[in-house]
Length: 241
Ligand code: ZN
Image 1 (cartoon, rainbow, N blue to C red):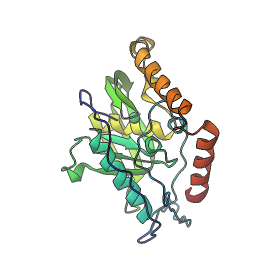
Image 2 (spheres, rainbow, N blue to C red; image 1 turned 60 degrees about the horizontal axis):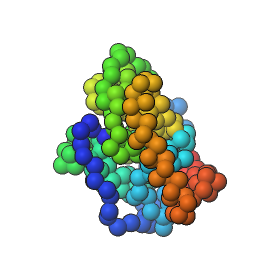
Image 3 (cartoon, rainbow, N blue to C red; image 1 turned 180 degrees about the horizontal axis):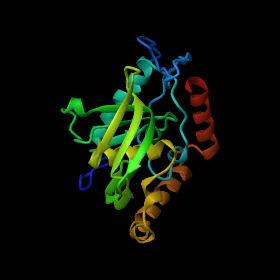
């Protein structure tokens, strides 16, 4: 998610690569106590540093739960934080970097120096919604597009952190809004799906421009077709969920 009124800049840093090291793995334990036992190796040799923009199909993918946190996942998440700050974001979901996993990050201050506001939410579940409030939102997958979105004012949620501990969150304000926005991403739901017809109409031309840009990428051969994208996601899921 992007804070209202923050200007975005195009990301130009070099592509980086994840290695296949597998140190210091943490197993995520269900409340039932059954440990997961498969190993995650996120994209050895494959860049994750690009944010995909609407209407990239991965943004519509319903992500599957991660089963283990290890060095590879920590590296992927560190990359996500770098990307999020570079684009002046306050939240970023794995779908937005073309990974099919149920994890997102938040720092509602948007300030990389404020480390105690950095949150990694793995396999999140929102348990309780209350109140109702409309506020303007943006999204790093919809550059320069903002619109008012109605959401719950307060939520109670649980998620694993990077240490593999399950934490409960009782939050309101911007944190609750950003949490709901990013959690939607994990189900393939986008903020434009929650707009009133009139608000959607207001940004229609901007959405059409993004769709035209995506079609242009396809025509130039720099964007894989839907079948290739789906096959890659399936393979990533097979390995890590
Ligand atoms: Zn978003």
